[in-house]
Amino acid sequence: MNSPSPAQQHTALWAGTAAFTVSFAVWTIFSIIGVQIKAELGLNDTQFGLLVATPILTGSLSRIFLGVWTEQLGGRLIFSAVMLAGAGATWLLTWADTYPTYLLAALGVGIAGGSFTVVITYVSKWFPKERQGTALGIVGAGNIGSAVTKLFAPLVMVAVGWHGVARIWAVALAVSAVIFYLVTSDEPDVVERRAKGVQAVPFLVQLQPLRNLQVWRFSLYYFFVFGAFVALALWLPRYLVGAYGLDLKTAGMIAAAYSIPASLFRVVGGWASDRYGARKVMYWTFIGSVICTFLLSYPSTSYVVQGIKGPIAFTLAVGVLPFTMLVFALGFFMSLGKAAVYKHIPVYYPDNVGSVAGVVGMIGGLGGFILPIAFGVLNDLIGVWTSCFMLLFVLVAIALTWMHFAIRRMELARHPQVARDTDLPEIMQVAGSAPALRRDG
Image (cartoon, rainbow, N blue to C red; front, side, top):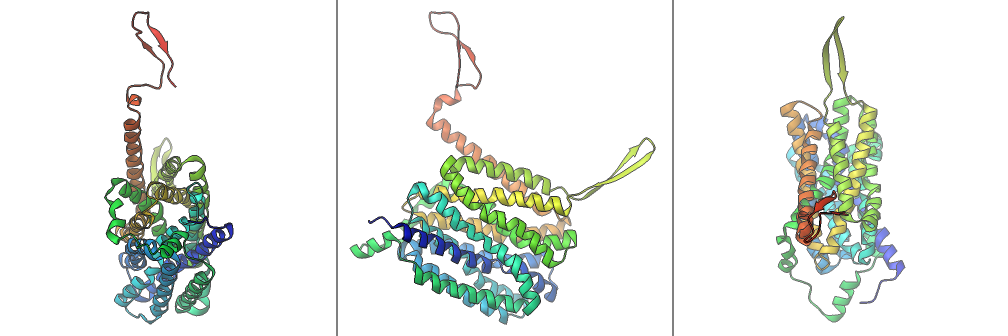
């Protein structure tokens, strides 16, 4: 197989990133127009959570199939088809007029989110392993499409209504599909396979790596770093309007302060994974996220202390500015993790990138579907706004614990002597001599 030229690599990378950015903007469109639909239909928080999460369901469940089809047919064709289908569904969204029809239309809009596995598989084929982390980090920065929607959709909605937002976003996605297909080329391995008349690997064979527990551990990581990112990208405008009484435009801008770093810094995560190792980056991600979600979980609480001269009342609460800073930091750590998870896949499963990336992306995307619904249910049941961050704290703590013990088991299996050694100097009895001081490390 001939090595691709730098021009071909750059075209695949940047065209894929641009097209994925538009796809992600469409996929998260309900984060803004959903607030208006909620008001029009008089939905409660659980119904709203289901509405904004429904596109995430389609985008998630489709990823495993789209990943395998990308391996078989090529990413250029599949990505273009996915974008055109998403554009058509988004245009048809404007015809919905009842809650069930909105949910049905939202299922169609969600196909745009399935593009992630396609573009990751497509771009990975153009770069050697030592550069895949950075390349996939750049592609993943297309998550910034969520911030594009939050920043511009409220302005467009004021001018032409939410129907206008849906139509404009649909046209943008259709144009992106045509441009992507015209400027890119088929992957080198797909071209070579066609030239030699070699049949693509069968669907069920592509799925064989999914029997490995490691794949599902990666999926849990992605359930948090990506699924929780999508969930918060959808939920934050509603959270800020309800918890802090902000208007939708201001809430969208603050929510973008979370979405932008959670997207752009994915490039840094890819570079750091290449430079320092994806495992170390995952530790940074989970430890930082544990701290941020713990602080964000603290509800506004009033205290009365019986002082010497009488009761002393005070309130502890996270204000708008500290909240913005904390979600910015949380978005940064999540962005590192999103890149690090996908750095693992081409290295461990080079011949099954599509299927493994598909299932990891599917589970991560399901987090974006399940968590907004859970946020709404917790609001309705508990009545505490910060309950969403309490749930995320538990989730990331579980992921960190599982990762650490899994890594520890692998290290012990590879180096059994580690279990017997200590980190401190110890006195050892040397046969035939007096005790001697051994220095470890």
